[in-house]
Length: 312
Image (spheres, rainbow, N blue to C red):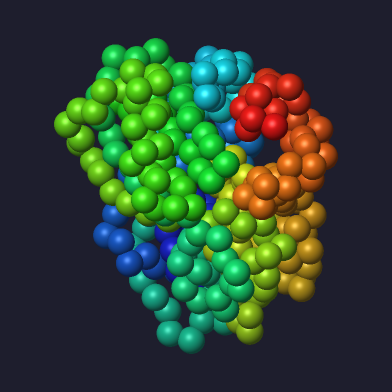
């Protein structure tokens, strides 16, 4: 028996991979239904391929594909980012939530809380605040970023927008959102949804161990969020790796495989480290690798563009 705790992106995907392949598995979440917090964007080709493995047609959940990502006023052509209905996708993947007694393996898919694995030394968790509003603004992804965090506006279609910010300093979040509103014309309006949350921005190698006794972690619990805040695909990849290790009876290889296959997440988080420490030489040295990664996945940009964005 395998027990998964946490029915988010990683937990639900792992549950359906295991159950589809004949494993006895249960999943539990303290929430009664999925929520509408951040993470509405995802790399389309990767998501479509991964979800096809559990028999889900990802196209059914795509809301739109923005033409541009506009960061600090710099217009970058969008490669493959789509906005998807994360809440509806998770709702369709949720099953009867239950907890088994004495499972052989426990999966910690509890995200930033990392409720079952040992705590992380020198963890880096950023508070976030977000809401949904209606605006008549061109449907691109808008970002206002600084060294310690960024604000965003993601179009959800039909005039709906997901607006929010995350920052090392919680007190600066309203300031970041105000700057975004002023720059891109998002006048504050009545909100249909509003909440706060947290996001872990720490490379996987600093989130070890991934395995402790009979508990193994996936997703954000083990640092599967990129320096740009992308957590959906890395979380799905970690769940797939865990499934493959379980199926092959090679759980001992799980940590090394995650670190190898998500090396790009590691690189981006090292860049965040350098920026937070004002180590601009290290940040500049990482830029060619980051450009190579992102130009093929998310947005088309150059080293000059990134240096302009971060003002170095």
